[in-house]
Image (cartoon, rainbow, N blue to C red):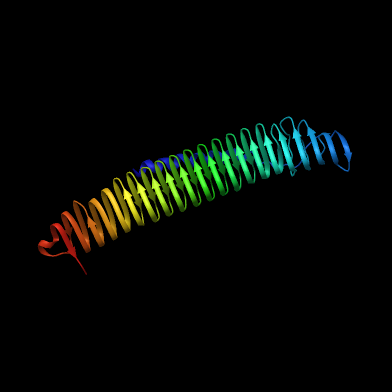
Length: 352
C-alpha cells in the first residue's frame, strides 16, 4: 500500500518539475531592444489618444504590437503578439491577443494569454493562460493554466492547472491540479490533486490525492489518499488512506488505512488498518490496529499493542506486551500478567 502512495506522490511532483522547466522563458533578462517608436498622437505631453508604438502614454493607446515600451497609463489595446518589453509597466486596462509587459496593473484581458515578466496585479484573464515571471495578485483566471514564478495571492483559477514556484494564498482552484513549491493557504482544490512542497492550511481538497512536503492543517480531503511528510491536523479524510510521516491529529477517516510513523490522536475511523508508533484517543478500526503505545480506547477485530496499553481494547483478539487497563474479547493476551492470567477469554485486566 505504501508503494502505491509513494508512486502517486512521485507522479505529481514530476508534473511540478515539468512546470518549473516551462518557466525558464523568463531567464533572458536582456534590456537591449531594437524597436520603432513611430506613432500618431492626438494630444499633448504624452497624453490623449495614440496610434502606434508610443513608449510612454497616458490615455487611450492603440498599437499593432508593443515593442520596448516603458509606461502606459490608461487603456492599452494591442492587436498582435508582443515583442520584447523589458522593465515596462502597463497600468489601467490592457486588452489584446496577448498583453505583455514587465508589470501589468489593473485589468488585463488576453484572448490567448496575459503575460508579465515581473508582476501581474488586479483582474487578470488569459483565454489559454496567465503567466508571470514574478507574482500574480488579484482575481486571476487562465483558461488552461495560471503560472507564476513567485507567489499567487487572491482568487486563482486555472481550467487545467495552477502552478506557482512560490506560495498560494486565497481561493485556489485547478481543474486538474494545484501545484506549488511554497505553501497553500485558504481554499485549495485540485480536480485530481493538490501538491505542495510547503504547508497546506485551510480547506484542502484533491479529487484523487492531497500531497504535502510539510504539514497539512484544516479540513483535508483526498479522494484516494492524503499523504504528507509532516503532520496532518484537523478533519482529515482520505478516501482510501491517510499517510503521515509526522503526527495525525483530529477527526481521521479512511476506507483502508491510516498510517503514521509517530502519533495518531483524536477520533479514528478506519475500514481496514490503523498503524502508528502511538495512538491517543478513540479508535474504531474494522480490521486491525497495530501500535506501540495505546492511550485511550481501541475497537478492532485484532488489537496488537506492541509495547504499552493504557486504556481499553475491544475486539476478537487482543494482545498487549504490557497491559495497564482492560481487554475485552474472545482471546485476550497480556504478556506482563503471570500464570493463567496471561491468556484469558472474554475479559482480561492488569493495573500498575
